[in-house]
Figure 1 (cartoon, each protein chain N blue to C red):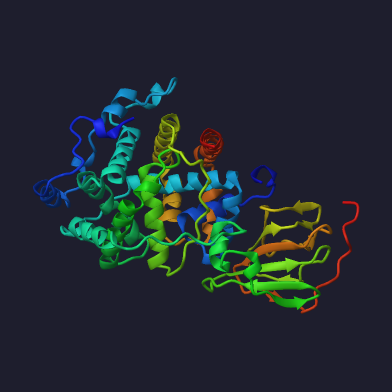
Figure 2 (tube, each protein chain N blue to C red):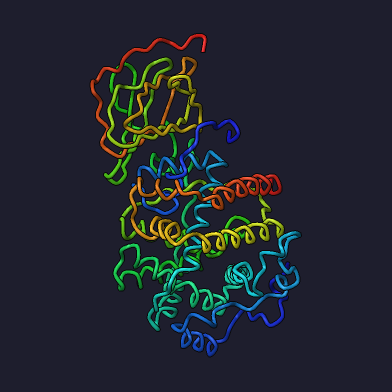
Length: 215
Length: 241
């Protein structure tokens, strides 16, 4: 899949993911995309290496004289912990699977009208992560967002202007972007969409869109 | 490579020696460079055409590679002496990182111990063809910061599916460690203002737009490292599948 991914994360988001300063919902969509995309995985590992280089050169703070003994005690105490059971099989990348019980079939969808469904995932409230189900050929619900919005395709595809976003592709839009994503006619589209401000649907009825015949 | 046959290697330190380590622990700085192993000394770690970057006999890469052997000893032999050395070097840096990220001293002390315990427990997951030990320590400390300071889960990318016998190839390990050294040198040589911005991006809670400013810098070395990392990742994947 990796070679087919055409739309990637920005350097700023990748660095912030590595630095660990983003809201949980952002981390979720980034970790899911990176699971599917070798190029962004390499970039994250490189930004991690920047963090490692900074840590290697940072000033030191003295730890308590008992610190090593306490740490070894922690290690011994944990040795008898039973191994964690392997996670259930998943049909989406592991970071997302951990939020939905393993499978898209287990998602508790709520209809928002015209066949469009959504499920808000449980993350910290600085940002919102939701799964969106858009029937083939339909437009995403008309919505506004104040900050940044990231939309990762899991199934199917959508078009935005002239660009096609297929599985693994991620669209990063800011408030200045005018965009009207429309699901590809061939297949229902399932996306993971993340916004850093609560997303507000302008109406409960999404617009009907012309099928993209001939594109 | 066979770590077990390294001369002078003592996989199971006795109790007395362990106590000795404890006493030295809080004196960290100068004496904490680990001894070279036979393997790394033999390889010499100088790639063709790369001699110019070896300015000092004890470079970052030499240290980093030796930390790799320490982690291997912890993984294979539960070697407490190797762990004590790793602890003496990295615990004061992890604590510093956690305090600069907004933790108070008591919390940073406690979390540092948890981070170091995690390194022991996850030693089998460390892949020296993908990260230096410093990088690995950073990622564990960062996740602890998110967990404790920000009280959030940290979604991590799914592991790559290597083959069943996926031991890292030494050539990949050497290539990664050399790239890491070059990155460290490049960061050290940045103008103070730029270096400062990058440090703030990692060591304090910077907003997205501030990070955007940091990544907008002419960070040629980081960008070219990303290209190198991608090439190396693809190469490693082909090798291990």
